[in-house]
Image (tube, rainbow, N blue to C red):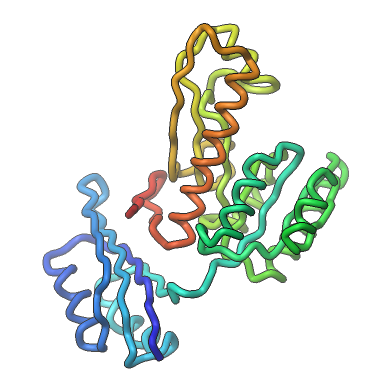
Length: 282
């Protein structure tokens, strides 16, 4: 029973929490390899992530003991086996730069995820999925079939046991019910021009306005469109010599990198929700 675990928790802040957690792990044979904590003065909440090695108890035994330990502190907590890759389902439409980047990183061992399925409303990337031996589900969406398609998507996600759903440039707005079902485990990526330059051809709009910065935002999906808790953002500087195509290319690169970092941190249990914000222990 040689396991490395990741414990994440949040609770009302009080004296001695770090001591209590480390003492509990010591008592149960846990050797801390990495630890980080944050006290949010605005909410009065304490957040902590601890990675530790333990050869005395298995996951089930530790979970049972943690339940009793956490209750007096009103902790929200999670215990994960660090070696187990996170089951993931990816949704995509017709822009494949983020999908291609994620699949390459997974294949290269750079992301601790297992892509169990790819779902798309177009057939553009079925050959890419086949090349990685990943099931591909083509589910066209219309206004009349949206509810049925989302139900089928949820069936695929549930059957895969997916802990993470990645919208890798999936160009469909999810229903409120879908967002609720995927709360805290669905990540979206989009350009960072929002709320400006909405709608079609944002890079054309940005080019016409002479923007100097372009970027990308990765966030959790909520019913408030593109307003979920932000996980990661980045920007790239541009100038008057850049064409629309240059802007779009740099945007695609930035989106791929930002989404990859968000997926990596989520899959390593480094992201904790703090209301409308996130705490990210990088």
